[in-house]
Structures are given as structure tokens and as C-alpha cells.
Length: 104
Image (cartoon, rainbow, N blue to C red):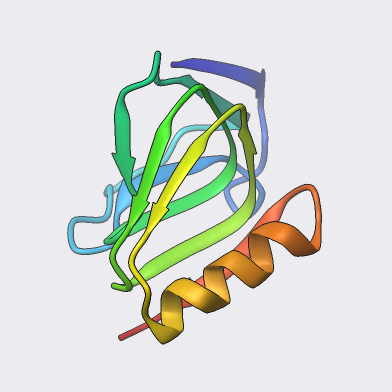
């Protein structure tokens, strides 16, 4: 993982954490860049803000997720056929960056 743009204010800084176990203090970088090298990243229970994900297999089973200004580059998606999964697909195809939240 790489980070870029040190000195971002807390309300604009990149976040990469589990929703169920939030970090007590975040970083102050503007973006996180994750090269998964074809590894799997599961979106359920993830909070991501200002993150660029490269070369990953992205899985989503319909659970709680919070994506804000997230980019997926050269990724494969495995999305469970649920209402939330269909909504995620809609958001992924709507623009270059993804904003998507499921709270329950």
C-alpha cells in the first residue's frame, strides 16, 4: 500500500478500516493506493475513503459497507446477487469513482 498527499485535514483524509473496528486515529494522507496483486479484497464491513484499488478480485456479499471516492482499476468483481449487490453494481457503472453506503 502506498499513501500520497500528506497533510490532509481529518475530514478529507484517506480512510481504510473495518466498520466494526474503526481506528482510533486515522492518517493524514490524501489518498491510499492498494495494489492487491490479484489478491481478494472483501468489501463487507469495510470503510474506504479516497482509496485507489489496483489489480484486485473484489468480493461483496451484500453486507455493511461505506465507500466514498473509491476507484477500482483493473479489478475483477464477484458480487452476490442481492439487492445491495445490484445497487453496488449500479454505482460502480455510474462514474469513475464510487460512492456507496449500506448501513445494515
